[in-house]
Length: 212
Image (cartoon, rainbow, N blue to C red):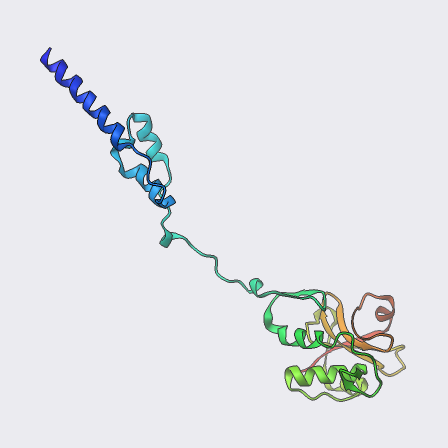
């Protein structure tokens, strides 16, 4: 009888302790502290089922265990609003930003300033400002100075040349951007971005060249 009374008293005492100690962590505790409390507090485990649940929960992730993704080259990509194109790396950012500032410059034969420029004047101005390279002034002589490359091997900054027929000389030049787009100074609109897929440029495209 006495033994049963003692066991009952101990059980009641345990119940009272669980009431006072099995408390919710303070609101100021961090999420990791909240999860950790589930594991270290013996008062939170009141049955074998609770023990199984506690052991099945994943261990808390501590701040120093968090891994941050490394910067990839793609994260350096940037968008040129004036050109309407995304570029994958910052490698050509200077060229893109400089060329974009010329958008809308009127065409003027024999000139190479932002008050007016022809096609070769535009290309020579960009290459001088961006790369410090002085190209030949005319599109015909410029073609003789570059390395010929295949159309499907073009990169941003390469030059594109145009002829009206195989027997006629080169009459136009522009700077390749990407996705078949190039920037040039056209007689019917000044400095603009056009596509090599447009019928006129597709028909008259002659070759691509790279300045080394």
